Each structure stands twice: as structure tokens, then as C-alpha cells.
Length: 221
Image (cartoon, rainbow, N blue to C red; front, side):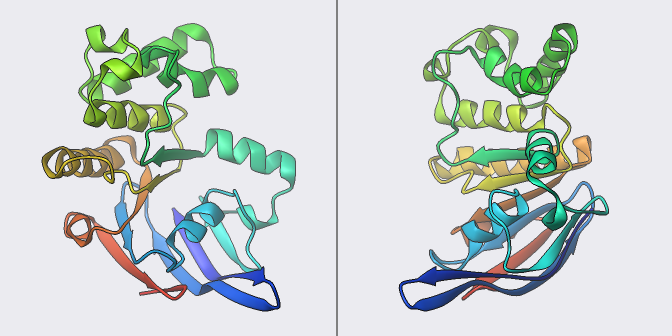
């Protein structure tokens, strides 16, 4: 469960304070795939950074499974980002000199999970996103863009996060592949009981979401 209350973020620019987030409020349950649509500069990326504990709000609260992450100290925030949040990026951000399997296992290595458990969890997720055993042994460059994004989604899920934040996850994909990735995110949200939020410029993605929001001038509707 994600609950955002009165979230405000002011950014100082020269002598002017820009309000990037303006009293944002919303709630999302487990297993929900939600989208946030808005133009560049509307505040979407800032909101993702706040939800992912990469930045701190000026005021307001963010609750993830009942815990107020805006009050966590630095050490707890590191653990939160590592174990409770998954990130999916437009450019995939896979490590080029690691195999697909090694890329997916890496977050579990940082979390101190046993090697045997790492492999079984990675194998399960790669199967769920449609990457077979042969492709799991390849380097990312040997996969298509859509396949790389599927690997990135599997990697985001490995530590069983409460929340996955996707930044323009279909931005580098053709329309058919992008549509398949959207369907995958929606099905995985329910299968893994994880809340997934995707920010996008593409209004067609919102039509496929369980819940959708629009962001304009730092306000969410």
C-alpha cells in the first residue's frame, strides 16, 4: 500500500523557488499498475525521485506499507531503496559485461541473499517475463530492446519490492513491443502483488492502467 499525503517539493533556482510538487495526495493498493502522464517539466520525475527516496520533500508524507519513509534516517533509506523499491528505466541500465542472469541476480547479491536462492528466484522471474534459459546466458547487447526491458523488469522484481517505479519504460521501444511491456507490467503487478507506477508522455499507456493520473504544474489529478 502506498499513501502520499500533502507532498510538496520546492526547488530553489537563483532567487526563485520553483514548486515541483504542489500538495500531492493519492493512494494505491498492492497489485496495482498505475500511470502518471504529463509534459516535460510537469513534476513527474521529481515525484518518482521522492517516492524512491532519492530526494526528500519540503513537506508532506509518504507511507509505504504503513511506514513513513520521509522520516527515515540515511541508513534506513539505503535499506529501503535496496530491498523495498525496484526501478525500471527507459534505457534499461543493464550492466553490459554481465550476463542476463547475472544482471537479474545482482540486487540479491547486495541484499545478502544466498546464491542458491538468487538463482532460483532469477530463473522464475526470467521465465515470467518471457526470457528463456538460452537468452539468460547472453550479454544484454545480444538481446532486442524489448527483451532488455523485460530483463530490467525482472531485475526490479527480484527483491520482492513493495513498489516499482518505471521512468518512461516504453520510451525506446516500438509501439507493438511497448504495448507488450505495458501488458507485462500490469500482469506482474498482480502476480507479484507489487504496486507499479510508470511515468510517461504517452496517453495511450494510461488507457491500459488500473489507475491513471495526470500531472500538470506539480499538481496531480
